Length: 143
Image (cartoon, rainbow, N blue to C red; front, side):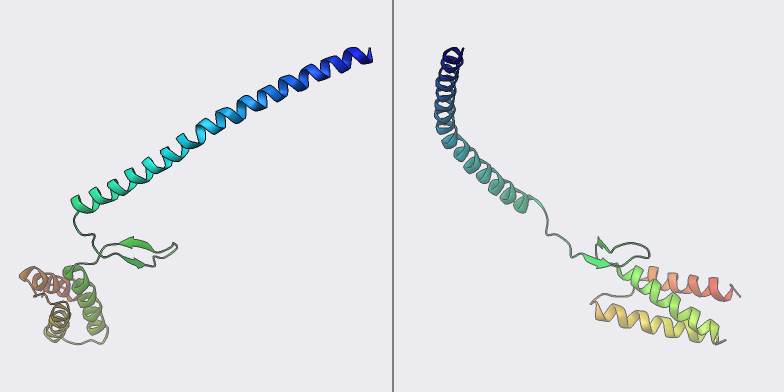
């Protein structure tokens, strides 16, 4: 009985050794292929980056702003209209709370808008002027 188990053990050992030898031979053949694949992938990535930089326009500057209840997200730069509308609205509301006259508030808001436009090397358009006047009419009523 012991000799029979010993015979089976020796047979299993020789089969395992042969299997290990086959595995090592296969791995030795695969290693150069794996290296070649890594080199080809790196070349493809480099060419893709080169192609994208050649075909895509210059990326716009993004800013991160904190939003209520969330993390800051990337957004593009705000337009002059958006910036001036926010600024003018705040200034008009401040003048309304202080019970100042509507024409004085509009004049002050337009001065602030023009200063912002000059700082950004842009000009104040009719659209922006109309937006400021419309906001003043909304706040004071269209008297």
